[in-house]
Image 1: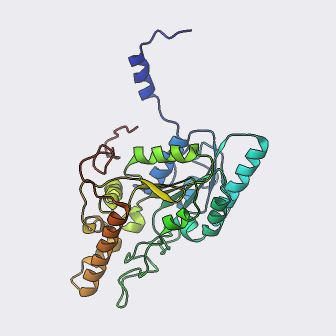
Image 2: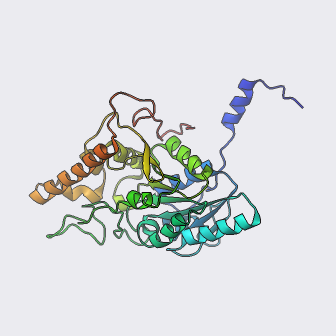
Image 3: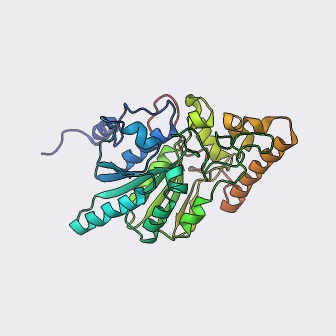
Length: 331
């Protein structure tokens, strides 16, 4: 039967319709947890017809403490290192059954950059039709804020403290994008919780592609980074605006799209908000040297990816809609 409602009235009803949530409220994440927000945005973008394989880590722990679960979709956890292998097996089984249900693997930086890298490489090399999402909070937060290979250079953690010989972690953050790009998979992207529409669009793109896809989501951790939970979005946005975390898309290992930076901010604006970098503002030569080093890394990212905007663009770092306090709805 034809509806008596006008198109405008239908559009208003559609706008009020609550989005599907694969991850519900009531979990045990810390206030301001970037990973919790990221997982919610990803699950909303994917929809209900999905099976999730989750590596050990914060997301697994705070959403599934027995006997409760915050997941509203089929969800499985096995080990720290094998979420990509589990997802590969699920995908192969669904293919054998002729089913079109999507398969998504999720992990933190520990389960992606480090412990699960071998299984991830195998999944990508075989080009399984799986979307892998890494929620990168840049340390082993679940077990006490130990450094990972994703921890930024000069950041303090419980295993890379500021001391007489070192100004925090002495190694560079692992260039995971280059490693993923070397597999020449159909789609790779970086995203952040500060730009939710950008993140959701990339998730939809990754889930629609036939073959392996990988999305790297920068996810602030108030506990491990040492900032108030109320500024998580501001911190995430500054990581983009300073060039510390470029937002890009790759196809078959080649960069095809970047979010341009309309106003490039100094790296110190990003670092100042986080306790893990406060030692870099001490009035000593070692601190000044490391601070300059981090600025040079960001400048390198801006140059290599061509991030600086020549003119304002609708989808640049200032034009793209961002998550803000106050409950504004984003598309």
